[in-house]
Image (tube, rainbow, N blue to C red):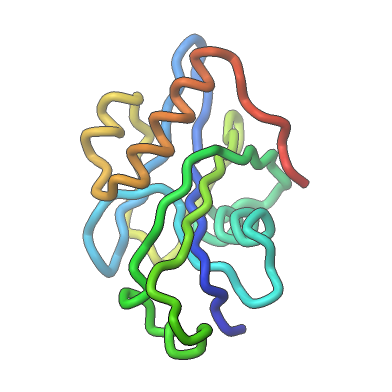
Length: 154
């Protein structure tokens, strides 16, 4: 299916007793650590794309709650092969961020990644390659600390 001109980012977390850990994936093609990320497909909403990407990249076999975050970013369209199919004048595309609670959920990473690691907030922040990932992680960390997750989206 053709790629839509937007990107999604999904920060996975789990609670381990009093602590919270965040899942970072090492990309196979770029050898960098990041959260779940991918492009929307034509006809998908950002929420649908985030649920699909999380399921594909984390090998989820059960439904999980997806929480919209306020963090958005812009990514230059030149980084995407599909940009020629997008409307003329598309120079940047939006990246929408979400969180997913994987407490008690088994994951199996896709072939797009070579490893997964569960890290505390400070270590995860230091390991992430992209600013948009650090911003979304920071928002999620603050929300979890304040017990202020938004309502999950369907």
